[in-house]
Amino acid sequence: MKGFVSNIIKPLFSKWDFFLAVWLGVLTLSLGYRINIIPLLALFMGAKLLAKTSQLLYKLLVIIYSLIGFLYAPTGIIYGSPDVNVVGSFLYTTLEESIGFLKQTPFYAFLLGLVVLILGIALVTEKKSTHAVASKKSLMMLSVFFVVLVSFGPMKKNRIDLSAYRFISDLVTAYRTVSTQNQGYAAIIQKKPIWQPVIKSRRYHTYLLVIGESVRRDYVHAFGGQFNNTPWLDSVPATLFNNYISAGPATVISLTNTLVYKQDREKQLNNSVVTLAEKSGFETWWLSNQGVKSHSDSPIARIAKSANHTGFINTGKADYSASSSDENLFPLLAEALKSPAGDKLIILHLMGSHPRACDRAQGRFDSDIGSKELSCYVKSIAMTDSLLRKANQLLSNSTANWTMMYFSDHGLSYIDKNSSRAYLTHGDSTKQNYQVPFFILSSDSTQRRVISQRRSGLDFITTFAQWLNIDDPAITGRCSMLSKSDCDEVNTVYDFNERLTNYNALPSIP
Image (tube, rainbow, N blue to C red; front, top):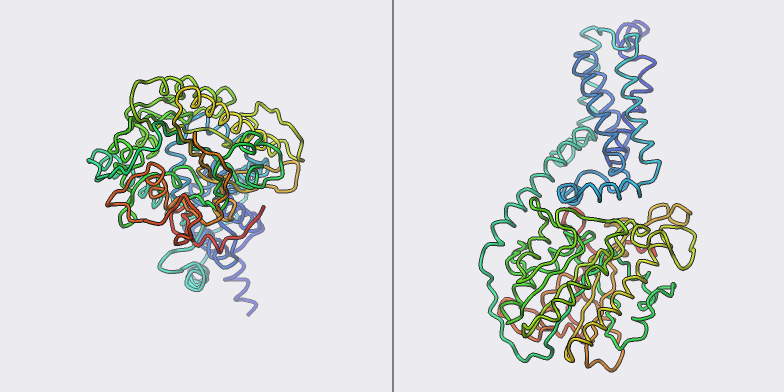
């Protein structure tokens, strides 16, 4: 037994194995995965086996993964492993948005990435050989350890559950999914819409749809929030939907599943609220404070470009700085309202409360609630309330017959809750990621109403058609979405991977 240990087991390990194990652990975390003992042991044995058989390949992979871990850690800590949302955000993002993301990322995420890099460099540059050539028996023993650990732990549902392998696999899968979607979007947006609307009567001549950004309903005073940040919405005779849930937890996922018609879960961008309105006789405008590029446009930008008129404040980029105020949309809105066109649908896409909120609030806030960023977030909602008040005034001054609808695309999650460092960012694991404000206000509104029945962004096409007061054979929902009718309750939402999940099963973290 003593000879077995000294001749076979002992040559396999060295004092540097502790640092290798730590490196693999922090690498797993930086890539967005949880640490599980058996997969981690399997990864450790695999690294040891590689080090004993090919020092060059071992060191090359350690350096490559150290760089990946260093660069990905800020994303991995906050958003997890690569998925459709992460890859899509990367493809659609710009330098300004990337800088904003890095500013908001907590220091410990950068520190973790730095630890991965430093340990990786140490592992490949240490002077003494810690991976001396092992005997065939030792290598056979190491191989057996590795195969057994992989067989009993990481091999699940025909997938190798090793973080280093999974990262590449998940990244490639997500990239292929997003690329395939983009190719499909580019092709389908060129097709003619299927809409055959029947206009029952035109109640209003100007319809203003305002799409907010990153607003949690529990932070809006008019919807029961504790901070007095919506004095205008508190006072107007609007219809408030206080049980509306967004279709998804991020802008692209939410809005593509909200604004377009789906058949067999296929999103038909050519059949959107824009083309439905146009087929119904409306002149359409899409006015946006969110960016548009000349290439790699998000599906939301593709929908926007299908409008008769488009206006993007940030052409060629997405500016998340304080200089890009939503109020910069007012000249475009005023121009649209002055147009001699008859019936109009005008869509305003706001920057709203997109992280970082302090950029939009210019670092100012009305009250300190314990965290500067959360204080700015409260202020950003007050700024949107002020914008909606001014939009209402513009509508009233331009026409006597108008209606305005507002909803936010998604909510947010806490990071470092109950601390002075607390802030809000995208997430898909709580109800608050989907609980958003939704209201309608019209020129003939006289009473304030609250609709508590569940309404969902997945039913928005039906809600939108009823707002326009039209029927269409493709829109099968016949429940009165704009009333207090108990419609079939939608309890599903999309997560970051665009998989349907049970909203009711999610925890609530107010």
